[in-house]
Length: 449
Length: 47
Image (tube, rainbow over the protein chains, first blue to last red):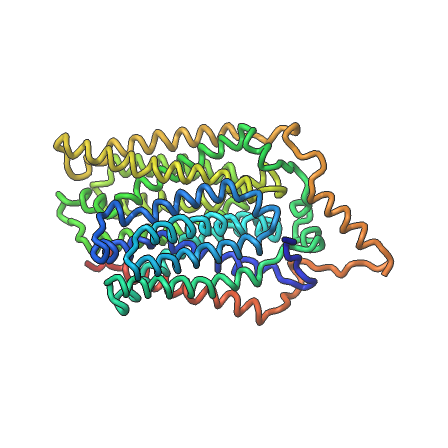
């Protein structure tokens, strides 16, 4: 499939909403928990069983992004967004059929497997295109899209809950809710499929900063990138940063309650829910804010901030967190903003190191770090909290060891970031496809009319 | 020999209507999500 080239006069500001229409949709995955209690009562499932579609979905996200990245680069963003639309929406439609017929395996297959492929392909679909449209501000551009993934849950969570209230929480009500989700997301994502365009050469060559616009610098293939130490250093950086964020996210509500249980200002259940919501806002703001900041201060410096200041924030919570509620809240918000920022800044970091040649495919392969952290983070936090509880500890002392581990992981990430150096020239593609295209376009433009 | 028409990011934005519709398409649901979020987040300070 030929990537859609922008006609003359096509504004680059049409590309971020195209990307957002996909990311705001697939971000629904983080609101799966809304469906858990109704499914458990309607289909007589355990909590572990009702989590299966989400867990399979996240595994498929990592796998399809890792293995489908090259296809996305080859076929272009419109193809990728169309595949994401079909998979994500048909996942909901299959789930609707599963709920209507009370066949739970169909929900797991639909939402988890088919929908999960849509998550992975959709997540990486606009990255490479956005970087090419915004060579002067790649961090901001990818930050906008990846902020959408965080925003998707903010929309879906109240929307799905209201729908279940209206349709009912029996199997028919759930089926109808899945059906409406599938159809609505199909329409919503269509905007992205229709609007997305790859830039014409003139736009790239005459962007405000011509030096950064030219596809000069390193151009490394995805196959070659995974053979470089830089890729694996970044893999460790992303994995450590995400694990540290999950350390707070996973147990945010019980954590703030436990921290202030023995104080004169205990935290109520509804206040704890407010704290969780505030963390979501920090996560989202960090994606656009820190990623845009990286365009000004550089990618390596911004990761120094995420990992170094992140470790300091964990240390402050561990030492003084139970003495001051504002200090606890501010430190947690900063950590979550770094968590979001880490996700959003990594495509631009990859572009700096490996060029735009196959940056989408390289990003897809790097997302396996996210899948690993998704298992590692909750495992550490839950295991440690359980063991501390068994040892008779309570309140803030339940989390001391977890925080120490998180500080250690962040230090490992910090060191990995320090080890990142420019990619050796032997890994570069000798005649980048993009440069060949540039030359061809340049020749075309010089032909007499 | 003809020169290509410069199309730069600093050129006056074209297709303003389409840009407005596209941003509204994604901005409206995001605003709804943010509104719901703010409602919930204020519970931390009010209760």
